[in-house]
Image 1: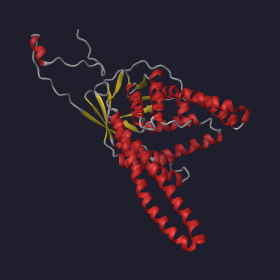
Image 2: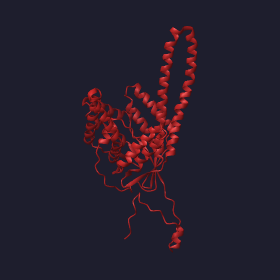
Image 3: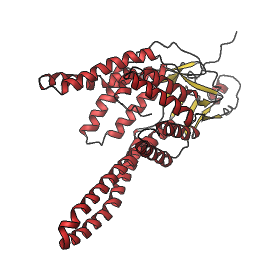
Image 4: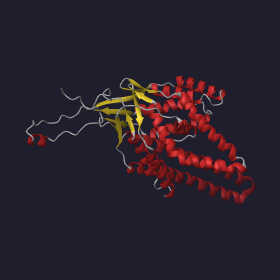
Length: 384
């Protein structure tokens, strides 16, 4: 009877040829593993997603927000269901009722914070709720990651997240505090710690994931984002200063009629310009971080993800999507969501030296939805 082959994630390194020869065994030249590349595709359509989104929005308004969990599940089921890898699509299986309980708890705290914050004699209650949120923030992130992972399936296997509270408080508590105390110098290190916590604790079936990136990659991303913002500010400031100087000369001639509206126009243009610079820099950081993380994820020692999409192109998509959503009063949200998902999927591949069917399932305990509700309602960005 022979032992069954080890599942992905538990491979032992092969013995060197010299060691085999000394042991009297046959000397064989190790064969290079065959690498199979699986492209990710996305088949969602803006029109279909718009119909789901508009119905969800209407029902959420009519039910005063009680329909939000069902809306969230329907939207994610559509996006996951149209994301394909090797002929199989992903699935989102969260229970809307579990999400509703989390939404109600978080919503009650948020409502109490708003009410007591406007009452002077109860302001200490609002302060206590805010302090409680900051204390629980890392724990809520951990619970959200666990819920999101266990609600995601592919080929009938669930993802899992094994993150512990201690790691969450280190990466989302102390790392963020270090970023604040260092005036932002430690912020890229905090990003690295947080992405590593997300990936290193994730698993597909019984195969754990590994993050092969380092803090240096995040410092490069941050410095590029700062360079974009500073360079853009300089380019914006030069014509603005020249305009102000010109207006100053004109003001000497006709101060009352020329200077005030011209100065207001210049200040408005500068404000919009700096908003655009911030949007470009932030969207670049998001795009480059996503690309970097996807290029440094390994699953079970036999699968690696890769991203070939352009960070600059994804930055443009992010900025133009935001502008379209503002100009259409939000009606372009479905189109923007599908547009971004389609571009990212077209630039993501999975390289494997084992069949994607070889992964084995593991026990997946139930996870509470409180953390997921908190990150959704309070708009906490987890970085992906």
